[in-house]
Image (cartoon, rainbow, N blue to C red; front, side, top):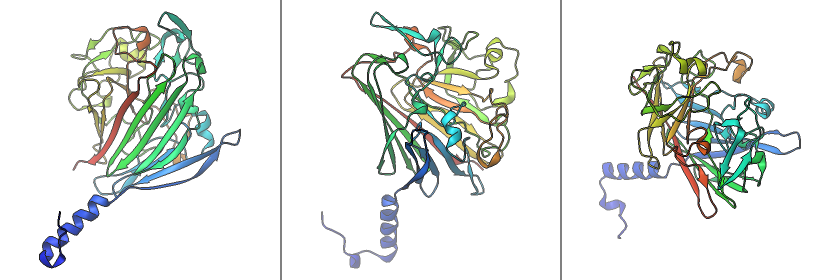
Length: 374
């Protein structure tokens, strides 16, 4: 192809070509800095991903999204995820602020499952159940980081038998920021048959972290069914219709509109803490949910190729945690939209399988897209 000569291009067209070239080559700035140390001396770093529209900060501990700064309708930036200013509170992090949760996100009933005829017993950390990988899940791992184009790649090797799970599992999670979209791609391989379910536990408050509750937010979840739970928040196995229930978010609805409804499922979750069965085909990326904050104009779209979405309305926040800028996180000061496979899938053969075998590669994508509405 012959290169253009400047002398043959009108000035107005030349300006357009230069502007388009600059835009096409504009990249996210990626920097890193020390953030703290574990008790054994392991250095934890924080990676800052900055585009002209958005800024996200990622810890090598737990793959935690420590902050996301996004503009409101007036162009004012605010941090829209809950968390801590310093490292030490993240070592405990009882609310899993911003973390990768696994090997198995959400709950497994009675902390056990059977795979290929063999029964596996897991550590119990949620009554009789196991939650988010157990006592020392992926949220408490120091991941190895590599800077990549527009982001950071984190790698963690979970040894055979850790928390009771079979197989040495190698997980890789890539965070990339392009414009106003933060993409999270996760992959994993194993040397023995095992189960895997990775998710991300950011608490969003589009008014800005610490700025009141999320009950006024308008939420849409593209799901016609959900998985009801028993008293210990384990799915019963039913895929129930949301029609005529407080779980119908197929049209934008205020989070607080029905959160106090007289409904057994609402009572059990103390609000919303349930898995929705997404309408789009599993394995195909589609819009799972959208949140709109009328006060700021911020909009968050969550896209995924996963079959489920756990909507948790921050019911167990109780004012005992002090977060960034001294903000005290009261009940429902943030909401989680956790892309996932269904809870307790290893004990429900009718649920989408979470099994991973040698020679196979687990892979999933989740995207957070931010915009404003006037």
